[in-house]
Structures are given as C-alpha cells and as structure tokens.
Amino acid sequence: MRITVASGKGGTGKTTIATSLARSLTTKGQVWYVDCDVEAPNGHLFLDPVFTTQAQTSIAIPQIQTDKCTACGICVSVCQFHALAKIGTSILVFPQLCHGCGSCTWNCPEDAIVEIPNPIGVIESGETQDGIHFVRGALTISEPMPTPIIRALKRGITPPETDIVIIDSPPGASCSAVETLRGSDFALLVTEPTPFGLHDLKQILGVVNDMNIPFGVIINRDGVGDNQMDIFLTEKNIPVLLRIPFSRTLATGIAGGRTLVDLQPEYQQLLQDLFHRISTIVSEQTHATINQ
Amino acid sequence: MPPSTSEIKQLVVLSGKGGTGKSSLVAAFAHLSSLDSLDPHTIIVDADVDAANLRLVIQPQESSPTEFWGGSLADIDPELCMGCGDCASVCRYDAVIQQADRKIFQIDPMACDGCAACVYACPQKAISMIQQQEGLWFYSKTPYGDLYDAELFPGKENSGKLVTTIKQRARLCAEENHASLIVVDGPPGIGCPVISACAGANLGLIVTEPSVMGLHDLKRILGVLQHFKIPTVICINKSDLYPEGTRHIEEFASLEGIQILESIPFDEHIPQAMLKGMPITAAFPNSESAKAIRHLWDSVLGLLNREAKKE
Image 1 (cartoon, each protein chain N blue to C red):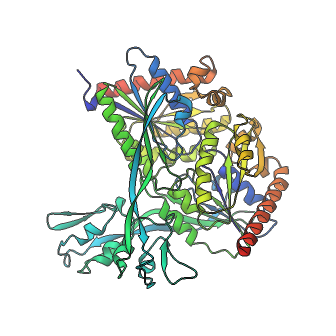
Image 2: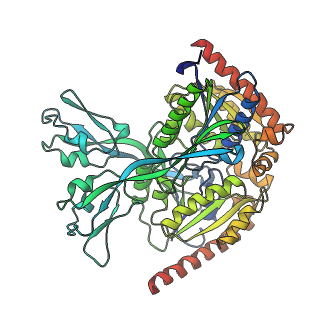
Image 3: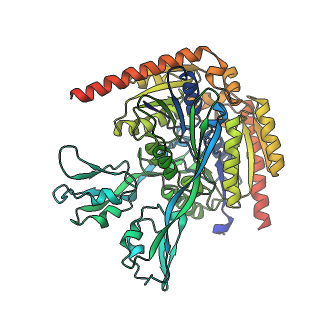
C-alpha cells in the first residue's frame, strides 16, 4: 500500500502527518517512510533515523570524444533542452541544462559521445528506533532538477505489496509532485482552512484527478480560517478524513521536531483509524475497477 | 530622466520551507510601498507559479492573461505505430506504455519529459512532438501597484521558464514606468524556479520560522543565495512560537555573519487579514505583526539604497 502525503501549498503539515502516520502504524506491519521533498527534506528531523547507506544520484550527461567528433551538430539539433552548443568546430556541453535523456548519444553518427555521471544529489537510507525503513533524497544546493532524484528514490525501493509505504511529497502541483504521486494507491491531501489553503488544494486536486488516484483530505490547523473549505469539500463530495484543531501547544511541539503521536498519544488511534479508512477506500476502488 | 536598468533594484523573498509567510509579507510590502509618496511605483512579481496566492491578498482590479507555451511532449500516431517498442527501449522516464489489448504503444503525458529520444528512435516516424500550453501569465493592476503572476496548469513542468518570463515582463514594465524596485515573492524549495526567481536579485530576504524544519531549510536556501553571491538578510516569522528555535536561528545567523533584520511575532491577525483578502498592514495596521513588518520594510529599503550607493 503506497500512500502519498501531498498538498498544493507549502507548510500545511505534510511532514507532520507523514511522519506521525508512519510512527503510528509500526504495530500494523512493515512501515516505510520515503521523503520525496528532496529540495527541503525534513522527515529525519521527526523520525531520527540512523542512516546506514548513502549513494550519489547522478544524471548521465554527454562527454564529447574530441578525437571522434566531426562537429556535424546532430547532437545539438536533437537536444530539446539546449544543453549542447556548437562553437566553431567544437561541441560544448552545459551540464545544468542536460536532462540525461541519452538522445545525443544514440543519434551521434560517429559514436563520439560517452555518458558520464553528473552528481545532482544523494539518497540515504536507514532505520528508525521503532523499526521504520527510512529513505530520503536530497538535491545538492544550486542544482536545478529535483525530479531525477525523486525518480531514482522511488525506483530504488521495492517493498512487498503488503508493506505500508508513506511517501512525503514536495509542495506544489507541478512535475516533482506528479513524479512523487505516480504509482500511489492513495493521495492524502493536507490543507488548511484559509484562502491560500483552498486555492492550492484545488491545484493538487487537478493533478490527482488527472492521474486517477483515489484521495482524501486532512484539514490541519482547523479553526484558523473560515468555512469556505468545508463548503467547497461538501459541494465536491470530498471526504474529510481527519481534522487537526489548531493549538499553540501542538504548533510549538511540532516546531521542536516531535510528531503528533509523541505530543498527544490519542493521535496513534486516530491515525490508525485513518489508515483503515484509506485501506477500505483503496480496496473498494480496486474492486470497482476490476468489475468495470 | 528615467532610471537605467541598473538602477532598478530587485528584492527576492524566499524561505526554503513552504508556508513560512512569504506571500503575506510581500503583500504587506506592496501595500507599504504604495503609501510612499516619494516612490509610489514598486512592481510585484509572484514567482510561485505553482501555487500563486499573492493575488488573493492584493486583489487585482483588472487582469490581462497571456498564454504560456512551454516545452513539447511526444505523441504516437496509432495508425503508424507497428508495436516494435524501440520508443520504450530508449525512454528513460517510463513514459512509453504498451496498450493492454493492442500491440501498439502510447505516451503517458504525465511522465514524458519532452526529450524526443523516441521521435528519433521510431523507425516508422510515428512519433511527433506537440508543444504544450503550460499555463497563463497575468499582468494586473492592483490597489498597491502592478502585479505580474502566473498560473501553471496542474501537473505541468515547473521549469523556471515561466518565472523568467514574468520577471522579464516586470523589468520592462519597471523601465517604462520609472519604477525603482521589483519585489519577487519566491517559490518554496531550492530548485529550478527558485534559481530563476533569484536571478539578478540585489538582495535576498529569507523568511524563516523558529522550528527544526525552518532552520534546516534556511541553511539550504542560504546556500543557494550564497552560491549566486546575493547579499542576504533574514526575518524570523512567528518568532515567539518556539523560543528555542529562535535562539538556534540567531546562533546560526551570527555564525554565518547574516543579519536578522526583524522578528515578527505569531499573530492571529495574519490569517484574519488573509480572510479579508487584504495585506496585514492595511487590514490591521495597529497589530503587532504589522508594526514589525513596517519596521522591516524600512530596514529593507535602507539596505537596498545602501547597495545602490555602493555601485
């Protein structure tokens, strides 16, 4: 079961929910926590894993073998990202523009291009004290592209179907959130009842609807805003799976790096109930799809 | 004499972590700059094209949209596809899927990176690239000055091109209108759109919050600003929510030699102003947070002017 915790708006509490959910489910089976917010990965601050492996993530960028290159310029013309340029009689490579697609390598008539790894980030894994398998990616500072790390992060883990995988998504509703959501059984959308929260929830709803992923909403900091969120969710028939009332004590505890379960033990049961509801929704959807 | 391009200053507001209060702060800056009779013309850019919220609190009176066309995605002509699978073998993005009942292939537009490797690999020439409209950008008149913002359609590539587009437009507008300042409300994170938001900035203002997450992401965004050699200052929002966290930020800032310009207390008036669709300084001018933000704005202008004199 793969549950992705996402939100359009940043700072709504994705990491709080994802880490708390992971922590509350350790008695229910093997639990994984995967931090795909590779630009601002924070899950380790709550779950405190011991990392045992670290691997560089690279994209394969072209290197021109000058002895073979005839500067025909075919590589420049096939590259969609302007990562290659012909200057005089030589070909220049701009690593930060390269997406690592391999097109230039395959299309070079002289076999003059080899691919070399260009590191853009790291992937680390380990375990927490309560037995959560913890995996995270981190984009190197000044590198522009998070998506290849997210892709590598997800390809790198192959838990059995029966394991519970909690995936922490980056904010937003563009390519990196899409890459994170791909292959998820369920999207848990965290929002807050404010105009910003509602606006950005609509953006991420557009994504999960397009991707055909079943979803539900958690309203965090309930009580800070107005009733527009509830009106919208009722109108669209979107289930609210959990409400977390705003409390200054809770906010302070989270700021100090503690999960909901650490701060208020009753969240353990609430989050287990949430998980069961998600499981029911997912299995109903699966049956519905099979019967179609 | 109109100001030359180099006299137009650019402030970029960033945070690393989302939800620290960037947009609420920039809305207040827009309001405060509109009160200044000496220099009433500041151009505002919302570079968080993925979750463009600024307009919700500065309420454009009129807004004109322009289509934004980005990169292209592959499309397989089912009439020409012979099902050889060469396209799937070259795709590094798992974007080529084989249809269950037929022996032909199709592209998953959500996964396609637009690299066109499949186009060149296809022996049938069955694949073409189709340019995508990825969103809209807007030029708007607001009660607090001109706004450039955009709406990236859900799921599209946030490549930074859209951010660059609206920033270029804002600069042209600043030149035409003799504006001396562009304020850019940046996106969260440290990736491509953030780098585009930083380009050409004279000053970076990091809005952080006193939490373990706030500090962690502050270090990362500071790394980006330092990499691009942009002078940077910090403001701590919700500073009284977790005093230990505030102390950690202060220790870190002093170690790095970065100035903390202001601490803004946690204030329920901020979400209340958001509900009214107004900047906090306009909705609740006597609130604690509004007072701190006015002081911050004066300090920021002071720094920008000092930067100007240095040049």
